[in-house]
Image (cartoon, rainbow, N blue to C red; front, side, top):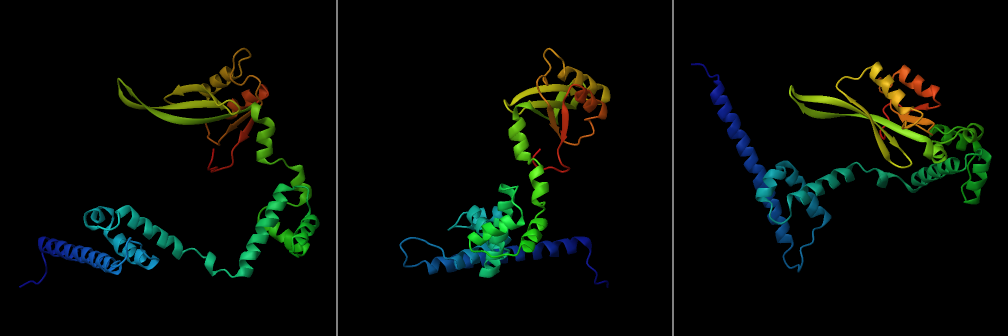
Length: 275
């Protein structure tokens, strides 16, 4: 006689095993909850210690929100799961493992970077003197290594370059930003996706819809460039810069047509998170 299980028997045994394990996990949580309740006897108001929160959170995480909503009685499922998230965050927080000297080193490095960014004409020795006034004695070579590690150039190069914040504040009235988004439109042929190109004047937040199309191409973009730079009522009248991402739809012809009218293209960095 064959001792192999047929698929139905295997399924029944698997489900039964899962149910037994699930019931055991529920029971373990209820036992822990009961233990915490007994520890609260004699107190006028229920207050949980960090250890009690930890014990409940560990058992609660295994059950999940849906089951907790049925069995948890002293704390809401949201609170239990929030306790578990804090428990995980605390586990990977290495700040308490750092000694005083290491924390001080990080604080000094942050101070050096701040000094260099806020005072772009300060060289290594000027920063060295400012640190000495605060009681921190560092060699100028150490300061140079810290700035290099944080991507900050020496003072001569740093002072000649305009920061992005400075550029925006100086040219805020002359910048137009642009981007694409899609919309779903019901047509007689069903649901269709359309591409929308819009422009926004940063200083006023005034928005202009450049165009809406099913499939964009170079000819469509060229016509939009002509509309934007119209001498009478073009949206780019009096502007100097177009801020945009690296979408291929901003074709060379499109940007060249804008450049001919004095509009400079400002491309955002690749994978820029805030464009």
